[in-house]
Amino acid sequence: MKKQMMALILFLFTFVLITDSLAAEKPRIGVLRFTNNTHAGWWHGGMGGELQDMLIAELASTKSFSVLERKELDAVVSEQKLGASGLVRKETAPEIGKLTGARYLISATVTSFEEDTSGKDAGFSLLGVSVGGNKGKAYMAVDLKVMDTNTGEIADVRTVEATSESSGLRLGLNLSFFSGNLGEKAKTPTAKAIRGCVVEIAQYLECSLLKGKDDSCMKEYDEKESKRKQKTKDSIKLE
Image 1 (cartoon, one colour):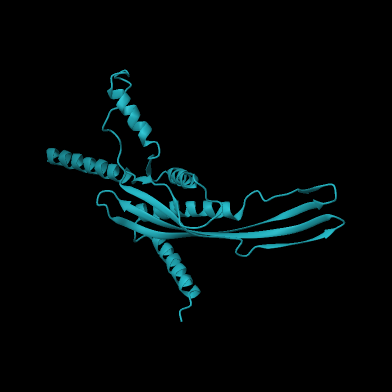
Image 2: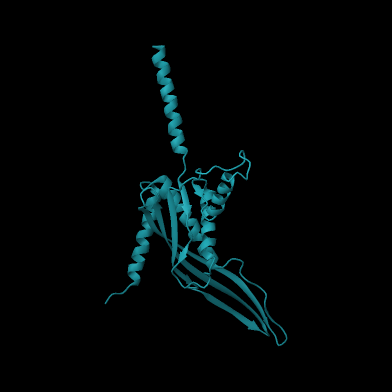
């Protein structure tokens, strides 16, 4: 009887350890460079990599994912090859074949961007001194794609949107001997919209890949998606 009880306790203990180990494993993801399908003026040659870095940092900060760095992969491989060459002390050389593979690859494309969609600029001028206020608005949409590296299939797609507004005080001088701008907004609507999209992507992936399709958070995103599609339909007039 005692042996059977001990065997049962040992089985339950082993089962708990295995279950905890599986539960603790974080989804392994790699983030690809962003691409751009718009004519946004702020986009330049290195912006795809900058947005990639922003999303990597945001995902890592959630502590919910094992985020794999792919931008510096060539440097890692070179270091492993150097270790295998015999030029590095064996006890300090990295092992070849120990790279961790990503289960999911995340790609993102900026598909829509609008700036100052409801901008305002008003004020007054007296004796060469002008005082006024300004208000700007920016909208950005990103098409998100999650690829399963085990099957090569697209595991998930979602369009993420962000709208941002900002306002500020504008002071200026316009005299015959001096002209300048004395104030500027610290954060532009464009920068806020970009950051908003990156944060929204990280939160969506946390919901989709960790909590699952049946979680209440996914219902909220589905509602957002329905509203987005309906808004798009309403803006199109077919004859």
